[in-house]
Amino acid sequence: METVPHDIRLIAVDMDGTLLDGEGAIPAPLWELLPRLAERGVAFVPASGRQLATLQRLFGDAAGEMTFIAENGAYVVRQGIEVSSDSIDRDVVERVIRHLRDLGQRGYDLGVVLCGKRSAYIERTDEAFRAEADAYYAALEAVDDVLAVDDDVLKIAIYDFAVAEHSVAPALDETARTHRVVVSGRHWVDIMNLDVDKGAALRRLQKALDVTSAQTAAFGDYLNDLEMLDAADWSYAMREAHPEVVARARYRAPSHLDHGVLTTIDELFPDA
Image (cartoon, rainbow, N blue to C red; front, side, top):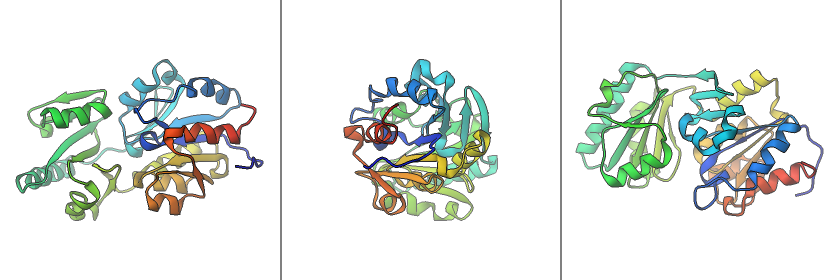
């Protein structure tokens, strides 16, 4: 990519299929890049469907000084202080959970995660589903009834052992009339309030940081990244991105398997 003049001050980066490598780990060169970006006044912001606790665990000692867009935009925290959050009404949570339980009775192979501010909660505890949930939720509690949990619910996440885009997602059409239903991975679907997405969260963060879309870069690979890419003039689809993401982004980045985010940032900031 030919280096062109820019004034990028904010870089929002999806995690799975975007920043993380093939082993689901943060590429080692990022640890040297983060302080160099900070010295230039550039905020590096992970933007993920994952919960805040999981993102903080991934970034370890660096997390305390970072900003995170968690739960697909429902929870934004900067240096440990909440910037914004958006909870789902309790009656909606109850209606959706009962519908998902009914789908399970009808043969859908689903695992449900109730995503709260303090923790995530599950009822299903078999090894296959627990392994998927543990990978994304550092703060995770198994309970007898998720509807008995006392926590602010930011998101309802559904793991579909079939292909979610063609299985459980169409079965949520009624919910999609009033709430955001987004396919966030091959097997994951997230339900949030209608105005919640990574893009809305990024725009709120831009306002808080006094940063424009022209000063923002964003990297993504899946459908839950679309609005985030719209909020950044410097929008990048990863090499293996979903076709809709490729169509929406202005630029392409190499594969996450080749550290495509870091490679592109190096090209944007050759002296960083």
